Image 1 (cartoon, rainbow, N blue to C red):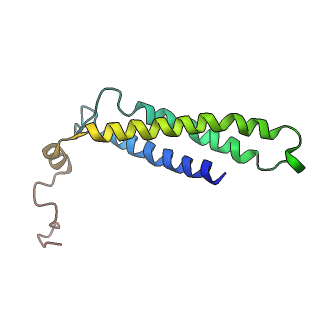
Image 2 (image 1 turned 120 degrees about the horizontal axis):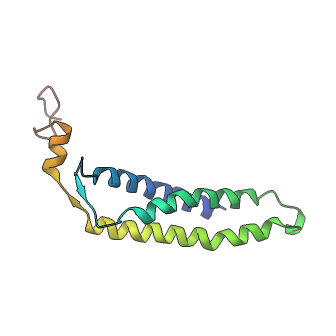
Image 3 (image 1 turned 60 degrees about the horizontal axis):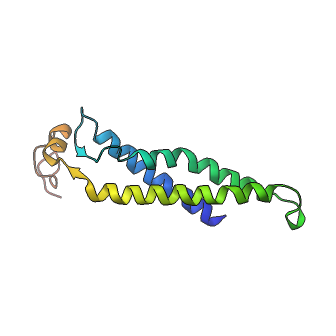
Length: 125
């Protein structure tokens, strides 16, 4: 079960990165350029993985010797959880390798045209 929870945290983190990247790649913002359909796999996994982890956690309250019916449900969730986690990890690794950052656009969107290491008062950090 610890593996399932760790995979859920991994995919959740990747999904958060994918959401941020998709937002930053929107034409209005245009701070990043990502390949066509780049974040979709991680975003789909982000929607599915939490339910799979919850299903596995629900199987913890079982009868003695894994008696009646919950273990079959848990057994059916593992392959889908592993495949979703693998797909999200692989797609994000490929996406990060092809990512293009538009630094001037980021600076103009933030309104900060100065040195990123200096504070608003002009003192350096």
